[in-house]
Structure formats: structure tokens, C-alpha cells
Image (cartoon, rainbow, N blue to C red; front, top):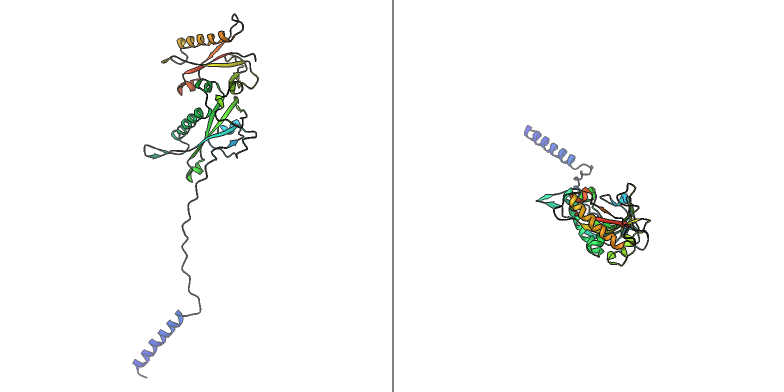
Length: 274
């Protein structure tokens, strides 16, 4: 056999061996499978628009709520009067749900809803113990896209206690005698050290009779404005008292916090022997 023939045989053997190696019994390795992209979690559902809750005072003043609804025909201390959508953008910037700007936005919309929901005139609303609290999503919920807010009607029974609400609350302040149940009363004169503000359905000895507007331009705790309010309050007591020679009254200024928030009226208090 010539060298050329020998060389060709060697080349052919190498080709056969290579082919044999490529066609071995080992199964071919599978290509790695690419994971399909995970769909983003849906935002948590907003709360029900007409629901009731049995909240404690501490739960009512929290910024978020995890309480479950309860039947409105049973014991409850909070009733949802609005569920809306937060607008978390200001000046082109996305704001956190717990930012002051967003929380003030929610507060304003809930307070506006309270007035239209309860009915009655402004004087009745000022004298009542009915108010509104609001809740927004937790930071974790807002990160998932939750943009709801919830406004709940509550009645303040005392300093840190809520009163039970009736089944129907829409237009409540338009009802006759509503302040006998939900008005603002006190355990004594507001000038007394032992004074406690309570709902009028609780035992009490004094009652807030009127909300007196302070003159425009008044300074906080100003003498002239205070004297005018005291005189107006005395006139109210004179019309109510059975003994004109034994008049008792007390004008209560708004707190500094209320004054700074824009409140320009105080309360006229007189004894309520009932």
C-alpha cells in the first residue's frame, strides 16, 4: 500500500471515529428554558362604598385600617360615607400615599363629603359630635397600585371613645332633636378644671348652645373679641334661664390648633339641668 493510500485510510478512519462520537447513545442536552415574565400582582381591591365597622377610638385615628366590615343593623361605630381615588401627583412629582400633601387632599375631600352627607345647617354641624375620619392604603398596598381612600363617619362619645351609630346615618343632622343625642355637652363648665367634653346622650350638666363667630381680623384670645363673644353668650343664657338673676354661661375659644387651621368661631356653653 502506498503512502498516499495509507494517508487516505487514516483520514477516513478519523472521520468515522468523529462521526461515531457525534452519534453516541447519549441523549442531546436540552436547551435551557427561559422563564416567562411574571405578571404584576393586581392592586388590592378598594373597600366597599357602603360598609360599617366596629372600630375603637385608637383604630379610628390610625392612617390605615385592616378591620373587617360588620352588619350595619348591628353594633357599629363607623360608617363609610365615601370611597374615592387619591391624586398622588403634585407639580409633576409622584407623592407617597402618606405624604402631607396627599393626606391633606384626602382630609379636605372627606370633610366636604361629611357636610353634604349629614345635612342640617352649619350651626347644627358645629354643635354635633359627629365627625369624619379617613383611611388610605398602606405603603405596601400603594406600591402595588392601590390609590383609594375611605371616609368614615364617627361620633365622639368622649375624649377617647366612640359612640354607637344608628343604622341609617345619611341626613342625620336634619332630624328633629338630633343634638339631644349627638350634640356637644360637658360634665361641668368648660372653665372648670374637671371639665370633660361628652356626647349629649351621656350624663352631663352643661351644653354647647351656640357657635359664635368671632369678629373678622380678631387676634387669638383677643380681649375685644372675647368680650363681644361673652356678651353674645350671656344673651343666649338670658333667653333660656328660668331665673334671670342667676345667669351662668361660658364662652370657649377654639384651640390654638383649630385657630391655626382657620376656625374663627367658639362655643357658648350654659347649664343643662336635664
